[in-house]
Amino acid sequence: METGDRLLTPGEVAALFRVDPKTVTRWAAAGRISSIRTPGGHRRFRESEVRALLEGDEALDEPVSGNGRAHQSNE
Image 1 (cartoon, rainbow, N blue to C red):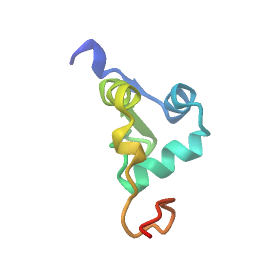
Image 2 (cartoon, rainbow, N blue to C red):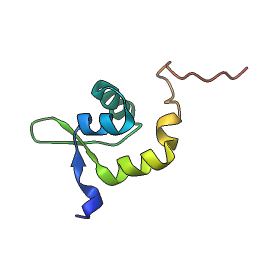
Image 3 (tube, rainbow, N blue to C red):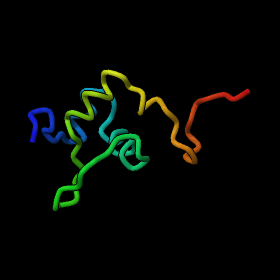
Image 4 (cartoon, rainbow, N blue to C red):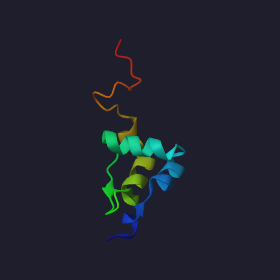
């Protein structure tokens, strides 16, 4: 395992993005960020992926089809 593959909690990811931990959980449920489940069912996030998203933010800015929450105007 690389040093960048440390696993982060939703709270740690939320602090990096300055959002609520529930937002991070919703991103994972919507497929915007991948997560790993612990044996106890808790979500963990690869630090390397989180850092890549922080540098680019491309995946989190893309609307997830079918969720009805995208703030894009196609008009």
